[in-house]
Length: 107
Image (cartoon, rainbow, N blue to C red; front, side, top):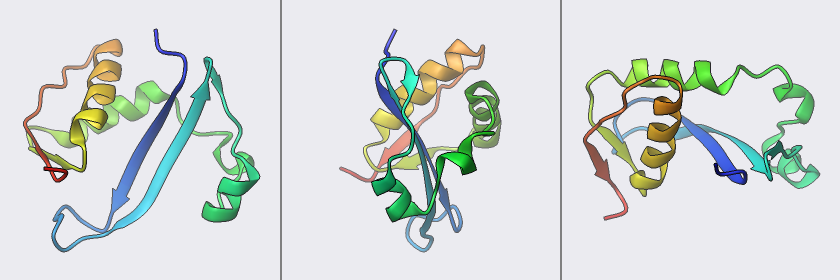
């Protein structure tokens, strides 16, 4: 089981990669199985504090909601296999199926 990783999610102004923009990136660093507190440097960049995220929802609910949101649509992302592998692993862990076609903007 992986114990050190970064989990993240993007929010955008819409679904069109040509016309829409990223409006939020959420990330959580886990080091040796423990959630790392948000550093002062990251708080300075993002304005997000540990207090703001202390009541965040459990990963299981977020992943299940994300799988439902995706429906049967093609996924679009930059270096998408990285995100896809994490999402598929966690979806499977929580009893969800995550088999999607994707387009990688890195290529």
